[in-house]
Image 1: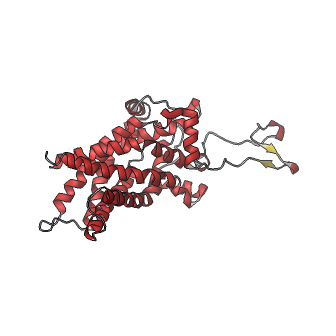
Image 2 (image 1 turned 90 degrees about the vertical axis):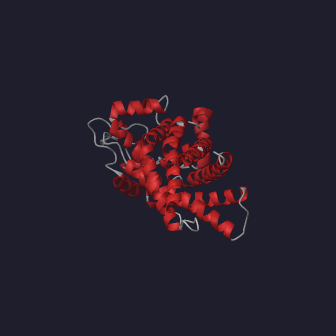
Image 3 (image 1 turned 60 degrees about the vertical axis):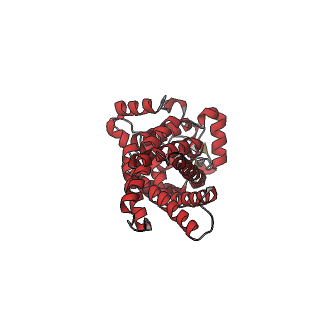
Amino acid sequence: MGAKGFVEGGIASIIAGCSTHPLDLIKVRMQLQGENHAAPNPNHHIQLRPAFAFNSTTIAAPGGHLHIPPPPPKAGPVSVGLKIFQTEGVAGLFSGVSATVLRQTLYSTTRMGLYEVFKQKWSDPNSGTLPLGRKIAAGLVAGGIGAAVGNPADVAMVRMQADGRLPASQRRNYKSVVDAISQMAKQEGVTSLWRGSSLTVNRAMIVTASQLASYDQFKETILEKGLMKDGLGTHVTASFAAGFVASVASNPVDVIKTRVMNMRVEPGMAAPYSGALDCALKTVRAEGPMALYKGFIPTISRQGPFTVVLFVTLEQVRKLLKDF
């Protein structure tokens, strides 16, 4: 019975992850917007010279004052998606999809399976129900363990998704998730595969607890109140509500996780961020507190459909495998 929960959760997660991958890619690109201003490269030192010696990005204004053009305005999800399509083609929208498959296989299979195990163990033996508090606890533990298992694939996925926004000379050009993981291990050490793992674990605990626990709670409430019968309508309604809850709860951690995982550490140079807290402080100081909700529209646009596809598929897979 225990193994069946892992199989059902894994199948549903892989289908949901692949079908919503382009939305996740747009979210990652948006979360990295403005980062160069938040964490400038320590190699870049501006030297004041006569106005005529500056390149075209710096203009001498009347009165001898120097004017450096402001950063370009932040692009929305539609324009980010169109730019990816125009510059990288349809294949660009699926950059890092092999890492998504591996991530869902490791991370989501583990968290979904463990959540079912905990639900069975912690349910009231008489009524068979599980209080909301225990659902949240089951989600927190299952999400944390799943994230620790899947972190290498998560780092690879973020890097592969972010690669297309870099100048050609700076791209990592990983051929696949296996190539990404092997290159990172060789060039940056095995520990780089767990870069940002504390953030991944924290985010996964928040997402799993809010997503799985709230889905079960919404579904139970709808059925208890007699609002709908146990069918597709109930599954879609409960899963979309769960996706919204998970998006609001996890977005700030997700932004920091994306930036820490994607940072380029040059040999002999200090890393742009010393850790999650340093990244959060630099981001808020440079871009304001709402920077922690960068990419929220694509997050909810992705988390909503992902959660709907995840649970609707899960319910169908459960029906197919109920006799096994």
